[in-house]
Length: 385
Image 1 (cartoon, one colour):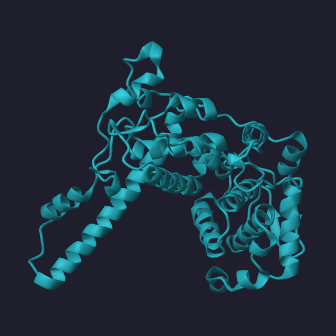
Image 2 (tube, rainbow, N blue to C red; image 1 turned 60 degrees about the vertical axis):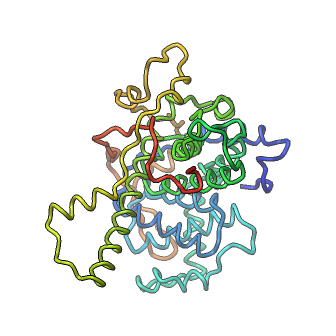
Image 3 (cartoon, one colour; image 1 turned 90 degrees about the vertical axis):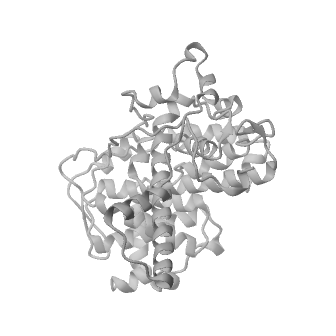
């Protein structure tokens, strides 16, 4: 997307943001009906690894994954050809978002380990046919906003000198902004790993990344008025998406602490060689490294509902409200072309079969609610006093 560098700091920032919000209303619909949906996480990670290898911008990475999601949602593709499709999506996205010098070359793509392991060799003709098929599928429209296109604009005012940390003034504003950007980037990558985030508007996902970062950093008020006005999203509207992000963060923290505990235990065993602990002792030791769920500090959240300040965030999360932000369906021409039946033959003798039956959306349901109104016990040391 042809945007000026650091457009969020210019005079046209509000106009560009408004244009992006308008374009996201016309994004193609995603149904989650791909027969290869179980492989989606692998290819999303593959695109992320390759984009990091070539130092592509986050917008190119997110656009590539989005193109892959939409294409998989419309066609039945073999596992081997999915590698070609994924790299073609990344190549198209990098051509659209990056400068010409940053676009990966054909020789560099063929040297990737995933290509040699699958005995795949990309040719110029092969990539050309795949790119044309992708462009025809999206009617030559790659101006598709993702969460990465919104995040910098929201981060520009995500931290202010009037914010409090644990009820006290911040010691270092610049360091807080740095950690805010790091956490927001982390949550942005988390949103790539689960196709369920496609049920939310990209601007909502970006806003939830900022809100989740403020929860982790224990900044108050958790959702200040300036962010509410800039994003046009209220706190209770963000809660379902924030809940998914914080659950993913909690699982990552548990996994990291588990690995750290195993490494420390193996190192201690190699030096002292103590007797093997019992199952109960190992279980208790493991639970020592698991961070507790966020404990309540409702005072920073109650201001979001002046008319019902006695309603806590826990009541919001435990309610039956699970409706996500509705996305508008794609234009009639694109929708009709996406739902065409039969097979699409490419120049490389590859057959992409359009699913004849509409498959139900594969959804992920969480059996536990995640308390957003609390704090972590494993906050970054620089924020501890």
